[in-house]
Length: 152
Image 1 (cartoon, rainbow, N blue to C red):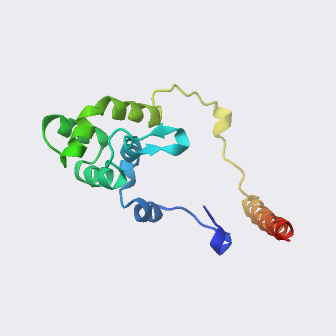
Image 2 (cartoon, rainbow, N blue to C red):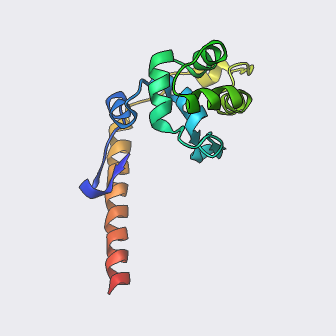
Image 3 (cartoon, rainbow, N blue to C red):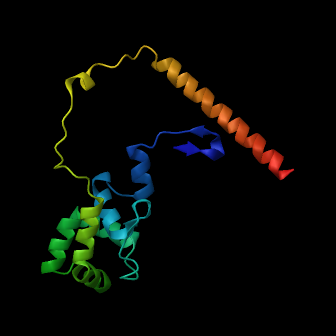
């Protein structure tokens, strides 16, 4: 993950995810089904149920664990405030469709050739990584130069 203000790169870890979303990563798919995923062009239910946003979704997912558990519970009893209950029961098909769209397919028959499974030669990894960092520094340097020329 690029950190422009620190002029370096950083790894995005589990700790970062939890700090950003205040949520267990196993709820990520369920959260994206409710609030949407702009990168994949999947809208959430905010436009259908005003007031039902990330804060409400996180609260309900922390309590129920998954979208499926939440929807099943909402079908038989009240899970939260009335607007949330109404949104979950009224837009259940929409949320399940989002889940189907955002889920990774696991039923694909993948065939690997044995020659693809050979052990990779790692003797050049440090040189490759060093070259990559050098390339990043050069890119950063040239982009800064270009920015200073265009501002002049």
